[in-house]
Image (cartoon, rainbow, N blue to C red):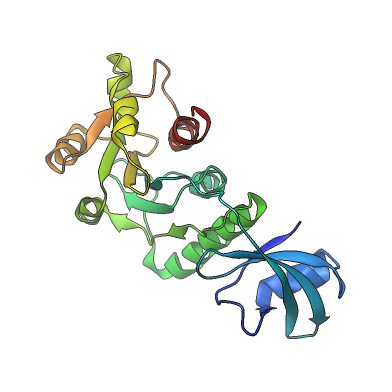
Length: 249
C-alpha cells in the first residue's frame, strides 16, 4: 500500500496532501475516491486512510484507523560521507534510508574530487531530500531522514560532539586485520543512543584527518578483510547494525 509523509498532524481526522504527493496519487497511481493509503504525520505516527476527494489542488484522505508500527532502528545512525563522485551520494542516501539511517551528513574531505558549489546547493539538497522521502515511503519507514547541507571537515568534527558514539571506517585498519572495534561499539550501545558513522571519499582519509578524528574521540575501525568502496562501506555498516539490533535477538 502506498505510503506518504505529511508535514502536519491529522486535522479533524483527515490529511490534506498537495504538491508532488497529490500528483503521484492522482497521475501516477491513478487512485480514486475510496482507495486506501497510509499517511505518516510529522510526529512519526501512521494511519490507514481512505481517499475521499481529489481536486486540482489537493487530495483529502480521511483517517480510518491509527496504526501501531515499529519499523525504525532502535539506535539513531547518522552517515557522514566524504563527498564522492557522480551520483554515489544519491545511492548512499537511497539505500541508507532503506536500511534505517536517521540522517546523512556529507562533508568535504581532503581527497574529495567533487568541489561543492554553493550556487547549486539548494537544488542538490532538495533532490537528496526527495530521494530520502521516496526511499522512506517505499521501505515503510515512520521517520523521514534528514540530509544536511554539505559541511567542511572542521564543521563535521564540531557537530560530532552531539553523538554518543563515533566511528570512522579506515581501509588501513582493514589491512592490519582490525576486526573488533565496530562490533565492540555496537555491544556498548543502548536503545535510543546515537552513532555517527564516518566514511571517506574514493581516495580515502588522509593521515592528518585520521589524527584529527582521534583527537575528537572517534574510534577508527576496519570492516573485515576486503576493502570496500566509499558507497558500499556505509551500507555494509548499516546492514550489520540492523542484524545486531533487530535480528540477532
